[in-house]
Image 1 (cartoon, rainbow, N blue to C red):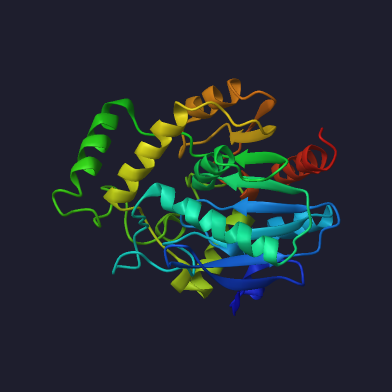
Image 2 (cartoon, rainbow, N blue to C red):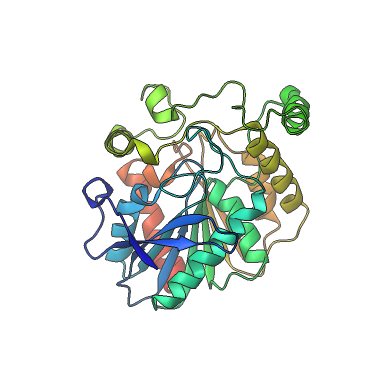
Length: 310
């Protein structure tokens, strides 16, 4: 592992963190971030689409205060990882299952770094979809937690056939790299005002996210490509038909969620043996970036769920 930049000034993370360049089995360079001190084990954080390591600096601090080390990653196509198309603005992936190559690279690196066990998973949004697949393929964690997991994408019913058709035709028509209509190359946090946003009701956390992107615009991506959308729709459909993995799971969804499908999350958790779903009143999509009261509730629950099996 070669050292990589870690922008500690904007991460607001605990001391002792480090980042590394990793090479996946198909030759893509990604970035991993470790905060290695954790007598109670290690939490693998799987970020969502558009996100990067520094965004989870405060989460790493909260977990560190509970006694957990942290490992997280810049998925291919975002953060400081290799972009997969010439235009660095859109979010793109060739195959959704390629993210599993990134998972395997992160696990190999965490093993090589000797991050303490047991290991746990905390996965957000797109990371929740990646995490569900990884668990089914044997990711060795004792327990898993999810926030706003992308087990379904919130699309108005009349538009779902259109989303499937347009995204599915993008490759044969040579439009794979085009942005999904209604999105733009600028990140949502830059293109939207805090008032009326769909990510968080906490102004301070909104400003935290915005300041990170303003300081390091090279880490920022905007809307997804049509090909990414088609790959995501296919992966969500495949995973919805498979049984839940045999790993205890705890999931949070905000009552004001507008990005992922709340019914899909409820269906998955209702069929998950040993699973528990909690709805956070007033919470939007980024519940780990929500109000202090919501964040305290989540980390207190993680303390019990990861630490004592509560």
